[in-house]
Image (cartoon, helix red, strand yellow):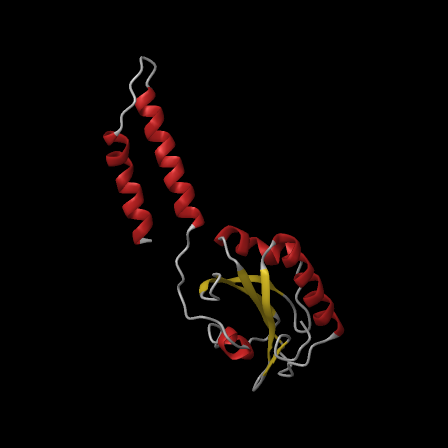
Length: 173
C-alpha cells in the first residue's frame, strides 16, 4: 500500500520532468499515460501479507474459526511465487453438507490479486475431514483449471473438528 501511494504521488513529478508540449495538450496526455501505467503496475504488484505456506496446517492457520462453522464455507488463499499469502477470500457459503463451487469463482480472486499459486480450503461441519466423492471431483477440476490458467494449486485442505485433510500431503492432488 505504501508503494502504491509513493508511485501515485510520483506521477506529477515524473510527468513534470519530461514534459512533451504540443498545441493539443500533449503534456496532459503524457501525465494521464503515466498515471495509467503506475496504476496498472500498482494493481499487478501485490505485497505478501502473511508467512509462506508449507503444509496443510499452514494453510488452515488464517481460518481459526472454520472448524466451528455450522455450514460449509469454501475459501481460497492467494499466494506469491514463494508461497507467501497475498490475501484470503471467501468463495462460497453452502449448507450443512455442501458448498457450491465453480472454478470460475474459485480462481477470480487469484486472477485479481495477480497470484502465482493458490490453496483452497473448506470445512466439514460434521467434524470429519474425510473427502467426499464430490470433494475429490472438485479438486480435480480446480487443478485442471489452474493448469489452464497458469496458476499452481498447492493444496486443497479440508478442515474438520480436530484434524485436517490435505490433498497434497495425502498424495491425492
